[in-house]
Amino acid sequence: MTTRTYAPYTLTPLQYDGAASPATRSAIVKYLRYMRDRLFEPEPNLLEMRLVCEHCSDAINSPWLVFPPELLAELRRSIEYVKLPEELAAWLWGAAQIGVEPL
Image (cartoon, rainbow, N blue to C red; front, side, top):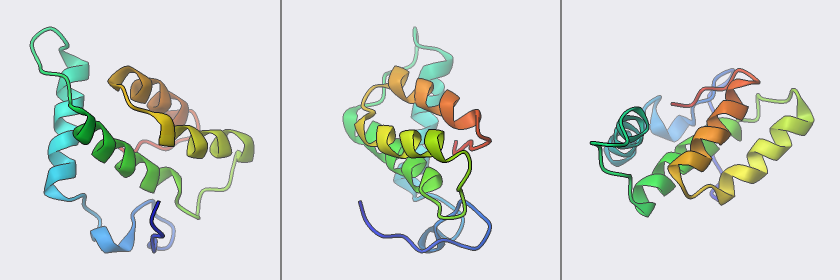
């Protein structure tokens, strides 16, 4: 994991200027489309899933997030092991419980 510099009181790393890279945005769109309609949309590949997970990792690792410490620590650890769309959906649900919605 690389060290990021964050904008004060936001979840956004400064080097992204408030926006994800085009490849990350494309991967997020593909993930969201797949989760909306699994029958007709292709599943994101491992690289695309890694890009989405890195985006989520940037959001959850913001130094401004401090409460609740136990759940936050678990989310920060577990995002590193997410590989499947269903696992990411479960992780996003947990993040939403503390008000973090990176997608």
